[in-house]
Length: 292
Image (cartoon, rainbow, N blue to C red):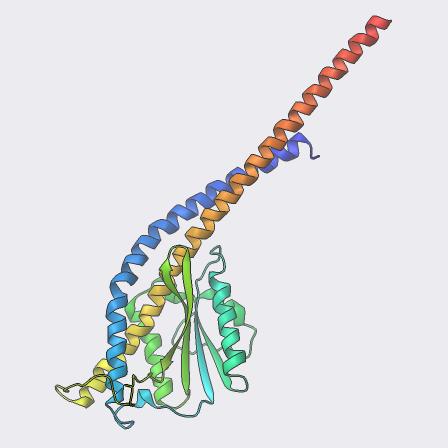
């Protein structure tokens, strides 16, 4: 059994850790409220805009909508969205595992390039030949240092330009979709080409009158919708990160509390045993003096 000083030092250390994890939980809870409100307000708009985009694309021919060009897949971009920091359970590892699974199962033998949004995803692939960091996008950690639609739009525009120029044939965004503080769903969404919504007989599900013209719709609505789609994924991931970290820190605090109680009981037993031994030694010494 460890001596009393060692046990006491461990109890002190665990108490300090509990204070840190409890504080981190409260900070994440405060950030989660703002991030959750943001994604809750944005998600219906983004999903409806994406639905309209799919329906609209079905009414346009290829010459009018270069973003729906379904061509042979030779080059693929995997955009992985993670956090810049850890201590959030399996939040980051789940994205890395999903990206690796997609690459191995769906795009084996293809020219795959990985673009990181978030430091942890970049760390996972920084030694890989697939890692691709275009100039002008900044470091992988910069997006979540100050998450804004403008920052997201720069990345979305780069991806759109790459696809339109024929440098990439498919772009997939892998991120965590926020469900609640304890649950995040790993998503792999096709960013480009646009997935066209089809009716039962192959006709478009929407009937649209174009005003002012199809060309202006293509030049304005489709790029805006794609930028919104990427921004929604980033906001989703941001809310998921705070939820995952809050849950992880809550569990860590509970586990530290259990360990502290166990060590306190162990300390009390050891202290009681030490006191009992001292009493026995005193009694034994007194008996020996009586015998003399």
